[in-house]
Length: 331
Image (cartoon, rainbow, N blue to C red; front, side, top):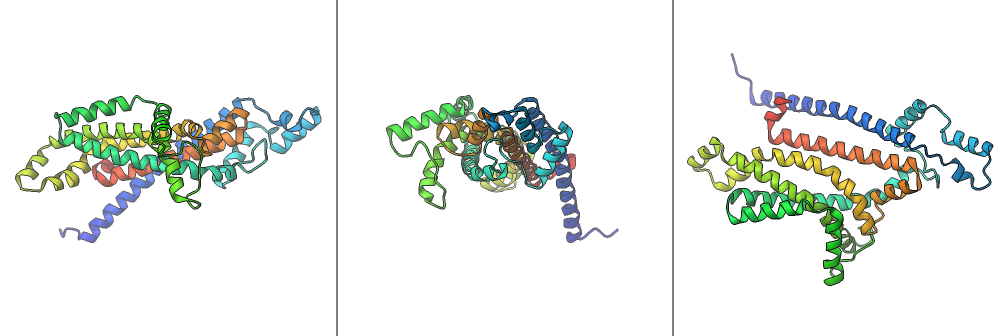
């Protein structure tokens, strides 16, 4: 029997990878639908109705009924949900109850702020988490390992708002290096934009970096004890190649898993950090809308957040499958 050629093998691997990606998306889609159902149910269970507030002090039962009809609140809940879901897939998240502005427009105005902070926080968390995790694993049992483990353990217990307040005290009040509030678009002034998002991003990234470092250290220490690492050393492979090509690839699974779990905390922590640093982002939009009972805006921000979390988890799964093909075969 003639063995398959290299192109046939690559084609077979590509088909396997595509099937694995599609199966991951097939699992995510029901999760998204269930999450949107819960989001809509929470809004319906709140019992909030904007008709009286929109009509004002001169509201009459006829005026309230007319407003409910215009907003579609007089229809059965199932019809409201199906109409809302149709709007989600067409990009129409409805209108705000209080200013009648499209929810998608409100989110689009605020999304750049949250993505700037969360994106920089993710980069900072990954860079420092990977560096600290590798250092702790390479120097296992030494003072560097103990220092990194102790510091990351303490840091992981600090809430984001505590870190944010500490950063403001140090870098804004004492050193006067960074501004403590506000937001400027990078297209207007890039340097000011970077200064404004640095402290909120650091406040959000501390927990990510600490957990990533701890999990990466655990995975690398376990992998360094494998027999193939000893064999690679005996064969004369360079230590950087062993560490970064073989060990890091096989020991990164716990860190990638924890990274997928920490991405939702970045979005959740944005509510607190954006409030502290007075940044008009998605977190502040959802918080303000919740306080005044603007259900469509709250539902819209939740749907966008759910979509980002699920997309990030798909990306994490793809990275795990790329680094460790055996995980695709197990799936």
